[in-house]
Image (cartoon, rainbow, N blue to C red; front, side, top):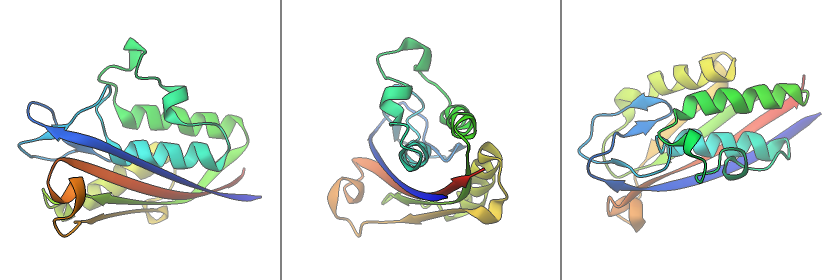
Length: 158
């Protein structure tokens, strides 16, 4: 049995925070605001995986009201999501993540992002796609107020 999931996340850009996307720190004068490391791309992917298996969302699993998740590494949380999927008999087949950001340019970091996610998912990097796009100056991403990400995944019964 195959199942598809979709996830989406957006965080505000602020000074004084690191910019972490798909587990990779990207040099930039602004970072994403959030309770954890605010890695919007990994958050979107976790929600896609959880949604595909009908296991809720990251807000229920890792609530921002719980101090144990303050500053949490989202890739470590992704590993926990994958363990939960496997405990329910599912395994990821492939994932596709799109990050919307006007700046910084993300192309130099895409391959590291793919490798980082693949390792966390326990799959080959050929099963992981990460893409970046601008919004041509439109919306909060275009105004450099925030960064958003969307992810889709395919999972199967293991």
